[in-house]
Structure formats: structure tokens, C-alpha cells
Image (cartoon, rainbow, N blue to C red; front, side):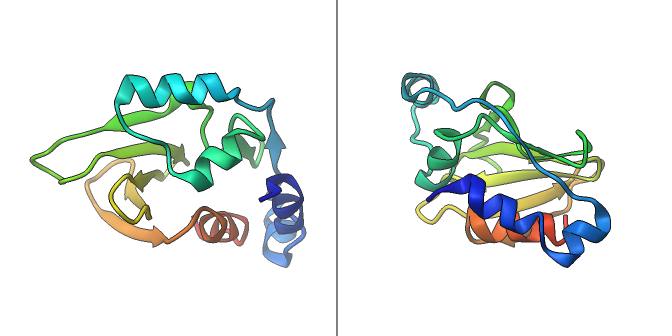
Length: 138
């Protein structure tokens, strides 16, 4: 997928324009950096987010108030077998929520309150997640 044109189109949504939700892109992540991350954590990065990172090392919006996709070096790998059978990547955050992608058999995106333990399903794919971000639902 060509992510930049997709996201630029999302910034033109009425909700994004009304809330002034913009997007800032960064230089791409080299494939050897992604492979190193996967090797270090002994788990592959889901293809959708890998594809995004190969085009931009993160996505900042609203002048740093939201990080829909954090730069690779700020990702947190979470693997607590007592809490979940599969690991997670914390890959995005706002002042209110942290966004996690499940590394189970069907990668899905969840969010949990920054100050609290409420966790909820948020989106089934990265494109649907980004659509919600630019509609101001995060």
C-alpha cells in the first residue's frame, strides 16, 4: 500500500479539517532495522505495519499531541504470558490512550487508557485504525 497518499487523503476528511488533524512523515525504516527488531524480539512485525514503516518511521499528528504510529525505536514489546497468550507491540499513543497491536494469529489493534487498565478493541487493521484517528475518534 502507498501510505502517504492514503493518509494525506485522510487529513482532508471534514472531521480532520475541523480538528486540524495533520500528519508528519519521517524517513523510512531500512529493512535491516526491521529485521533486527524482529530478531531481538523473536517475533515478526505484522505486514501492514511493516509496510508502513518501510515508508515512514512513525506518524505524528496534531503537532506532536498524537503519535498514531511511534518511531520504531520507541515501540514497546510486551509479552506477559500471565496476562495474554500472545505478545503485543505498543506502537502508538495520545495523552489519553496507548495503542497496541496484537501479535496473535489475527493482528488487531487495541487501546488502553494511559492512566488505568481499561483495554478495548479499537480496529481490525492499520487503515481502519488510521481512519478513526483522522476522524478524531482516538
